[in-house]
Length: 169
Image (cartoon, rainbow, N blue to C red; front, top):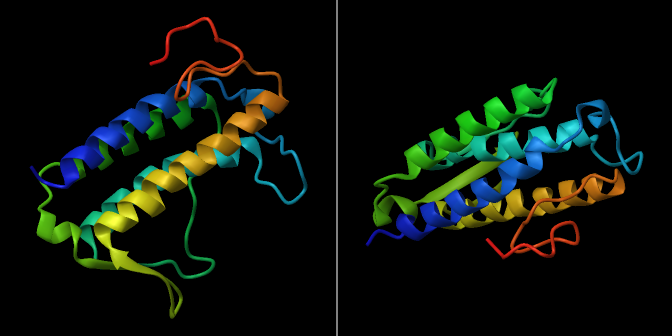
């Protein structure tokens, strides 16, 4: 078994949990944010798409240089655009993971901001931390935004207060 196989299963699971959350982001609240320092809801949901999109550079490049002012984050204009981009990035990310060798996953990968290295670790650790955990973190943030806007939440790792009578997924 390649080490990537359980990672693929984990990403598939997280993709399946995340999409229902994106499906309920209210279009009329894309600009809403809980605090002046917070990201607007539409930008936060769009950031989840960006995170999935970073899988390709992690797997196919030795480093990613994100020069200040040059990186353009995805900014969905509506829910349909958000979901289409999510589906495309998720499908591409999962396909790119297929068949990756253990050797390739232990090779060092770097992310730089200009000349400064901000991440330097094996690709496997980057997939777990920079992709999967990062996705989970911001999805949790999105669940709070949705709750604050009285949007009923779907199951995440089990029933929420909105669907507590359902069996866990």
